[in-house]
Length: 382
Image 1 (cartoon, one colour):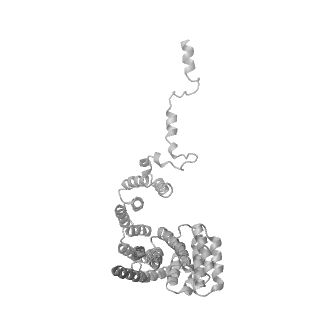
Image 2 (cartoon, one colour):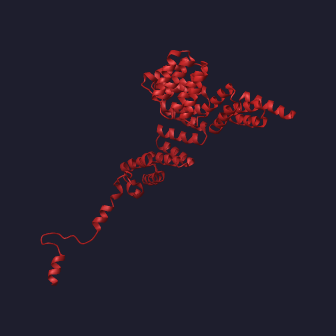
Image 3 (cartoon, helix red, strand yellow):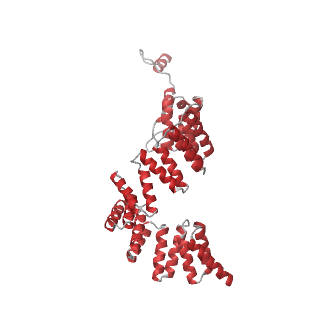
């Protein structure tokens, strides 16, 4: 009957019947964007309504850093930063700095420069200065970076990170003398700066002072640094400072700690030691091991070509030089050595082409300049 059907549709007496709607289901779906899925991202950023989070300062900052550093979604981070900056009346230095970081990652360097400079007007933070100087270096304006660092050092005298930034900039433009001065200044304020110690050690090594470089590297060992590069450099310093008893043990430590990315370089440096002591067979084996680990190691192929040429294996030497030229077009040695071999075999045109490529890679190479002069004289006599 009708009364029975009405009773069945209604709720039980004493209870509150919920209308037959799906609104509850929609409410639950509204929060699903913050839930992670098995195998998916922790937060599905694409489904977020960023306007809701931009008005909540603490949550917005955490979410912004998550999007930048974990999700690497710079477009969404830029959208959130723009909304939050607008909500703070364009006066919050933190959001301007994050805007600059987003623009920097997207390659919009001029926009990044404006945002970082605006952030510094609101609050002179050291981290923002460093970010702005990175922009200047990307724009190939090292002088602007140094000026900005110098201005920040006036406000923050003796800050090791700023001094380190100046040293890196001078190092990048090839002014080794000023770079070393600032690296030493870094150590005056932060005696445990690994980068400053390692940079000073490398500079002393390349200026024919391996004994002093070895002292710096031993200091790094005392500080607890243990890696392949350190032991490799110590081995080279020990060898060139005639401490042969320590040289091979240092290289042994380097080989034990080496991974696939650095193992070939260690074997290559061992081959240099073997060449220096006259053991060419050992040098050849080290170079073959280096090329078996890294088939793109141009320097190893170049030295294999030199050793084969010494044996009189000219065809094999030429093959090694060609591989080195293909894998290391930024180096000049394979092209110069190939030019010498081609000149010896009477292939003057190939020698001229290779010598020109060597001078393109290193215009001040005296031997290449002399060889190309000889080749031009021979061409004029033909």
